[in-house]
Amino acid sequence: MRLLLNRKNIRYKLLSLLFVAFILSSCGTGRKATRGKNEATSIRNAVINYSMQYLHKPYQAGGKGPYAFDCSGFTAYVFKKFGYKLGASSEEQDRQAATIQRREDLQVGDLVFFEGQNRNGKVGHVGIVTNITSKREFNFIHASTNNGVIISSSSEPYYDSRYLRGGRILKETAKQRASISTQAPKNSQTKRPTGKAIETDSATIIIHSRPPSPTEATAPQSHNKKEAKFQKKSLAVLTRQTAVPPPEEES
Image (cartoon, rainbow, N blue to C red; front, side, top):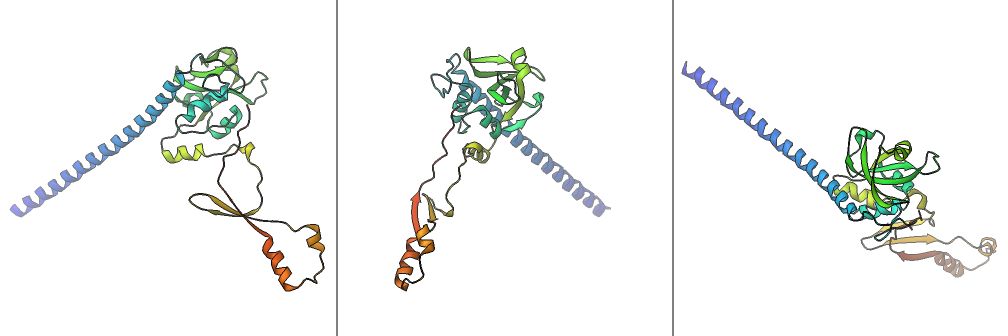
C-alpha cells in the first residue's frame, strides 16, 4: 500500500514539475515577443520624431535637405539618419520597399505612395505615415510643392484619389536593414567590363582581358616564340579598385 502511495506521489511531483517548466518557458517566449514588438515600435516612433524637426521647411525641386526638400529627398534624408539608403526618386523608393496593398495593414513609419499631377497610375509622390486615424485612414508627413514639409491626411480628396499603395522600409533586424541600405536602384546599374573579381577585406581586385586589336588578329604566324610569349603576357592587365556606390539619379 505504501509503495503505491509513493509511486503516486512521485508521479504527481513529476507532473507538477513539468507543468511549472512549461509555464516558465511560455512566459519567456512571451517576454521575447513583447520586447521585439516594443523595439520595432520604438524605432518607428524615433523616425517620426526626427522627421517632425523639419516641419515647415520649404520645398525645392531636387532638394535633399536639410534646409529644403522635395518629396523623395525628404524621405531619403529622414531614413538615412537610421542607416537606410533610399533611392533618389519616389519611383525608386517604391521599388525598394516591401509593398503594402491594403491600407489597414499600414503602420507608423511606413512609406505611402501617390500618383503625381498627371494621374497616369505611376508613383509621383511619397510621404511617411505619422499615425493611423482609423482602419483605412492615416496622417503622413511629406514635402508638398506648395507648402513645404507638412502633415496631411489620407482622407483629403486630393490624396485620397491619388493613393496607390504603401511600402515598408523599417525592419526589426540589423541584417534586414543592411540588405536595404546596400541595395542599388535598378535603373542605376551599368554594364561593367567582363573579368574575374576577387573579393578581399580592403578592396576588389578585377582582372580585365584586353580584346586583340585588328592588327593582332590578322598578324602572320611567323613570329618567333619569344615574341608570341611577350604578346600573350601583355594581354592580361591587373587593376586594383575599391567599391564605389552607384551614382544617384536626379528626382
